[in-house]
Image: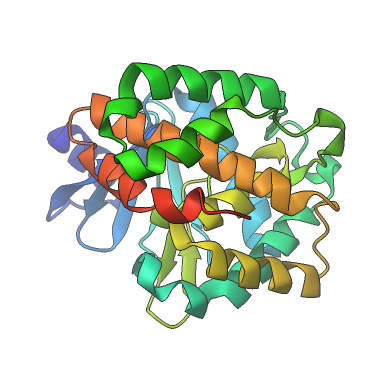
Length: 283
């Protein structure tokens, strides 16, 4: 695949690629770095239509985002990839969370304010009922995760799994990144320098992205991000904290299961296990 990515880059750059390095892969995508400053990324499942859709979406996002986002240089439909200049910064470390609460809150508010008609045809509606989230989480916990959870944390985790989920009618829907984990937020240690990987962007519950902030960065950063979100006009409804906690808890079980079952993905399990205590802390 390295040679194929090099050939694609050469075709569009008009010169041979000097270096191609696989950066890694997540749930949906595989990314390569070309010549140290170009990211070439492809969807694991989608083809030409998928990368063209995401490229068109990124053009809209770039117009409204208060933080840098990928600006596509080219799309290669035949190879099913797109390319953009590498954004500054490194994936967000949870220890730097408070520094990014304000820009994250502003970013989330700006995304949620995008009129739905502006992204019509570019994103889908992601509105699975809460009971479906909970059912999937229970299954992954029992089949994969349970035996890896420290004994003192099993009580709050299993109590959550027995409780009723939030009511679907408490949910609001807006345009969202919809996968705002720390690995998709770039920072220089002082502020947000980029938000990447827009594959899962959708008309969805804004509490989901806020829940991922809670999962990855902890309750203090979550509270500050939510405060700045509201200061910038964000409104995810009166039950946003309850819904965000629900999403955070489902997502962390999902991440741990993914990390335990996918080759090369152990990092997700280790991060998830290290964040269980704050994700399942008492309200």
